[in-house]
Image (cartoon, rainbow, N blue to C red; front, side, top):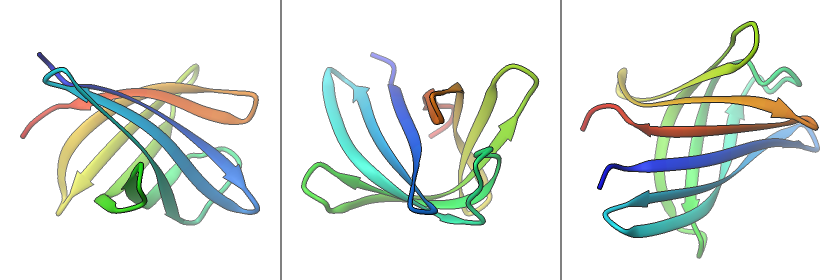
Length: 105
């Protein structure tokens, strides 16, 4: 089975946080995340995001870019300059929701 994920980013006291779910090979994983960088209300920008599993252990760290298009957002996650994940989403009630998937291993 192909992988698929969903994430939401939200602002909390001038910080950006994440909650995510990921499914691959009939297994589901959930967790949270912290976003570092020049946080702004538009969500657009380049960041470093650290993701944690549901018991608080670090699972992954990525460079992340959020690009605002006319009617949606594109999200890119990189490691060492290599694009690994691609997402698409939108903002509703000041929360950015996006689906994403692995584009190369």
